[in-house]
Image (cartoon, rainbow, N blue to C red):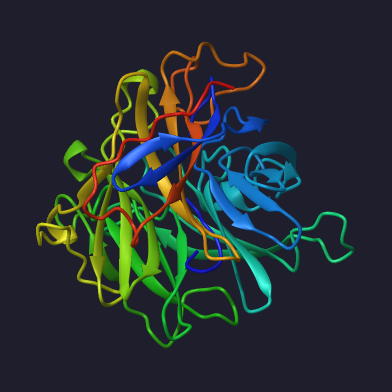
Length: 362
């Protein structure tokens, strides 16, 4: 989240690396180690005592690191694979997707999606905690229920991939979306963490095949995974284009645009509206790297910024056979990898064409 956290499926060979993005060049630094395999849709935040990664998995997996390099799996957010009410809301859902963690109003807010592959019926739900320190007596995740939902043939969006951002006036907003009518946004009531009743507007931020599409999913609509950062007087909207979750055939890539207003309009470096398919390419697959995407941005307490995303290393080898695929469409022999890279210079790489390259194999 802006000034607080970063957000931002599959199974197989997963590794973690760090890439320094400087002057449009991706240069490698020390590789990350530890429990770094199979970390789809990673979201990172700096907590009171350490950094934490939350990722798509039954129960939402939690990883911990004291310096962003060695990671250890320390548990799950949920006691079971799903909240007990999940099947009533989204029949057929298997586990939570794409968690987003932020801190406001004196609590950590973890948003996540419940959905099915290719289906539009989806919900974004919320659970909260006073602390991320598992040794604290105050550590307890409290279910807050559904925040946003989508229904087939009725809504011009799919309610997955939530991402929180705080505007310059302290207002809290959530973006989300996948295929259909693209990326949407609602104002959030900071007292409840739910959608604001004072501002019921659903804002359209980006789309590839029309913001009002209620039919889908279609390949021409392939946009998802929004994340917004406030920096240098602008709001920067990152999104992922094309196909995730196809192993070596994944074509995910990251695009960005900016706006002076949090609700848009967002335009790319060529002035093309993101609601009309715009978005400057800043990250794409190359050589052994396929499908970098679902990015987010970690802003540390001392002001450092890191871009985080997953990708597939097509040379890394087979998956751990003891772990099921994290996504119904993901080939069982390859998985998204976690990548954490420093954003250097005057801000997000709006005019750059950087490609994420893993520093080393784990």
